[in-house]
Image 1 (cartoon, rainbow, N blue to C red):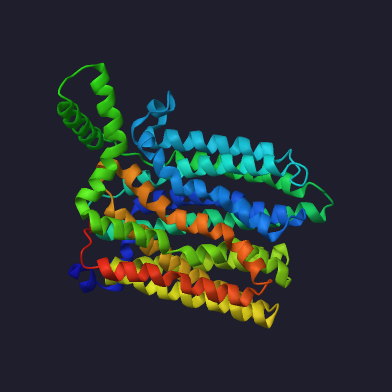
Image 2: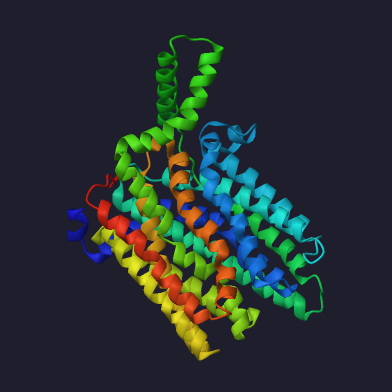
Length: 457
């Protein structure tokens, strides 16, 4: 790490000009865009059809599938998509398949009325979430595999670019969704959200075209390592036939990544890592789940939200994600985690001020800027942190395991965010204070294990 600190800022920043970073940017955008569909777009669609905050909050449970995508991540590492894998590659074949499912789901949404068919709307949203969560497994694997295993500086820069890409897909996708929804609403279309979903389908098609320009490395080392694990298990079984080969393949596919993670870190440290990952971004998730509803209730229009929360927020996120990547490179990813956690908690308090002061475009802009700054720092540090923990033999599975555990805290617990606001009788100020304190337990975990971590830096 000392060599990074001796470099000038311009020399450190030059890592962003690596052509691999553009590919990682696009992969991040592909990963972030579906969250627009099942996040702010679905929430506002349900809100404007008269559904309650609690219902909208509980509808967010569809995000919980992201917490469990590690369960089928081993399949993504091993199974090939017929025809597509041979034509465009293992990782890209899976991404295109999931993107197609999301596109077809948007077409289905365009024919549904949520008031009359809430269960169907949520079911289609669940399909989008499953396809998106599956897509994320292979997007993250392809992103990590763009960088050499021990290129620590490039990995942290790649994490920053992945976050920029994710927020680009999420924020600009939100701008497109909100502005088109408002345009069609003002034009007199009653089903303005349904029409908007068809427009968003065009974005999905554009993402697939861009994906064809992302290079996919040949996975010879991964295949050889996986084959060695299968052979080791088969030898332990004491015989070699179809049944033992099949059992060895299944065992190596499912148990190999988990065994590798615990063996590398040790049982106690591995558990502490999982505890930290689970708890780190819960407060941000509680705020994020209810933020659009809060903006709407305090008096901001969809175009206001699009401008300040999505458009302005995207610019802020891009700038501070790149700066966060530089900070992580020069100071180390562990220190970056502590700093970003404290920032994340502190900026939540700005929303309490906004809640108590009433509608204020200036305070809204300030709160969004600082919240996105903190979120950018936190996300790039978090992505770099878990990217450095993975074994390249099981890239997709181990990253999915860590990322999904982080998502578990954000989705399962944050599903009660609307109920918490209702329990507080709509006191948004107190709600945001509570979210500010939610990061503290994770930082305690990180402090305990910070000197014992084994990172591929």
